[in-house]
Length: 405
Image (cartoon, rainbow, N blue to C red; front, side, top):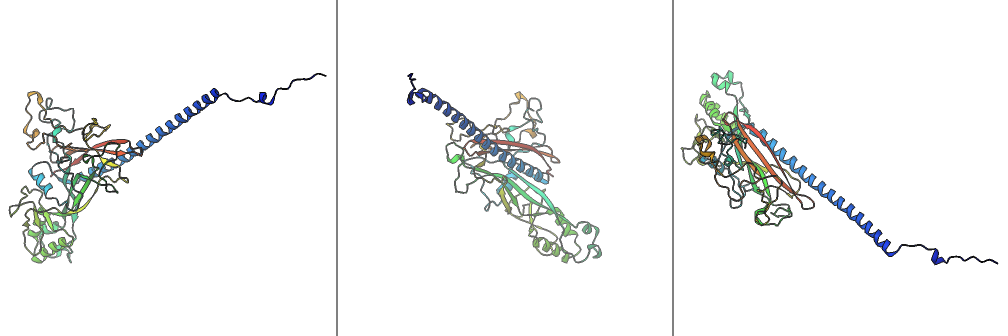
């Protein structure tokens, strides 16, 4: 009888050796690591893209808003004695306070009627019309035309009241307000000042907001004075004043006024008052009252800010890594011109010649051109922190048109 030998059960079982198991596990871990890294990279990129998109949307919206308001401007203030006095007499007590001067200087731009907005245009090529980088400001103050007032409440048509032609034609009065755009420190919802940007927090890294401050309404002084002078009766003069007071328009603004001082010598603001007088009384040291104040860029999260100047050195107290150069236009160095002497118009005495405390930051304003048609260069650089605490920045700019008449 022939017997065949059957392999044992243990011999029939085939498994993996320890080396095979380790190789397999290494491959699987590598795939997991690669997949996880790709997913994390995609997530970070998506987060940065989302934050950048929000920054771009907000800054462009703010710039277009400012451009539209500047189109209605009637007077642009600059960093001279008159502009400084206007700014000093804005009542900001109920508004976000301007950034402290010991942290970041704030200045109005210096207007150059024959200047250029092209950085490539130097004083060597054009001594009377070149790009003057140290006239850039980081605030904006202007008077804006906002419409006409005509609700005087006359019972009958003026033409039936034996009124002269000048009064009949003067049926409306121009109205203005003042706009002030400036940088302000801002706390988040938890009361924190600092920007969560993955860099060390310090008092110099407070979150910044761009504030749009708007004054109450003012009536045109020249038009109102003419209206009162030509009114045919005391009753009509009284009615004109009463109508303005009822509309909460209590002060007349004289665009051509140049003396903003105390006492009767002031020739910029006048009280509408009451009564029948044909003249308006000047107001001494008038405080321009607030109507509204709001963030110009309306973020829905806390981790957004107007940028500080770029600073790539981590050892600096204001280390702020930015992809977009900030500032782009400002430079405190006065052009040498290689011996050429710029016209007086091109070298205003009030032009700032030194940068202090990180001036100007992420808001730059430059104004050139004649009074009949100013060109206003605006640039906003803003920053945000993505979900992974990665800092992203966005810079946008445009040139707006404004009249200064």
